[in-house]
Image (cartoon, rainbow, N blue to C red; front, side, top):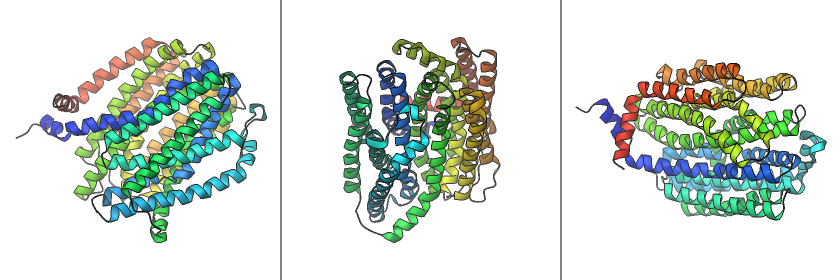
Length: 491
């Protein structure tokens, strides 16, 4: 009879590890490109232009929510059920493509009509933010990225890891090249950064349409559209709340802190987007596996096999973030000349807790998405959105950036409690309490104590953290680690 470790090793197959690596690295490349460009932005853009750029990028992310209409998430849920149907799957892919084209026409018209009014409402006049032309370019970039994201989701479900990685690498090269050329040709201007995003986006839009055309059958089916629109509707609200949780604090902070303080905070947050993209890429790989597993077993409940993916994800997430907290200040001081940006190091401990808690949220979200528990998802996300807006209004004017960070942590803890406590008759969660809840909770406590005792950044604090959590994780996860090591030997 096989030992438990051997069973685990058989589940973690070499081809899964190879494709996971390509999907993870490919998914992280766009954000890696943004991170590579950050030193050039900090060194070659004035304080005001850097702030303008951060808001144009934020607006682009906001508009992308409408152009994608959560098709990348809904697509995966539906496609996992019909991907082996030779007739239904191409038809479904084509319907999604035509649906997105129609949404693009609608929202592009709306943003062009109301863009100027929104910019006057959102931004302090001292920032000199305008919809034409840079805001419009941000909107078009959002449209392009929405199509590309959904198209590459199809590649993930078809397990075309090499194609996925190649396309993401192409995006990386184009964006980086144009941005660097623009920065040196037009120093302290927005042409380089924003044209790079626009031109690479147009290339990706063309690629996305080719992917849809080569895998789907385009057609008009309003009944299917209505069904798909209903499925996407709650998800749009969920993604919208996620944007607000991740972006709205800077729109309030522009009125209560100096631009240099806002830029230092934004620089650290943008670096954390690298962590977020790695997390999203890993879950984009894990979700299809667990959805398929639950579909094969015809169950609406977690079990030891599906939990294992999330257990390992949580452990890796903790070690990755602590390593990030050690490496990031060294990298920034090496490449960023302006010491005003260094004050952001003091926020690392508390901000990293926000991203560790996300591993719990991914776990519960998987079950709710699979079971289409829309009500529970809406309660979870909109309760967080409401609390975010209330706390930002109350805390940011009094505490500035620390108020924004305290708001983020409070909201994530509340959302986790809601996911854990809210009754759900459509899906049942059974799990090891420490591996899912305890480890992230312990990380939050350790970092809270660390920031209280050492309000100024000290690398030794994070060295101690890494040793402590590495020993703890090895003790608790030794079977999974042994299984992973045995699978790597087979590569």
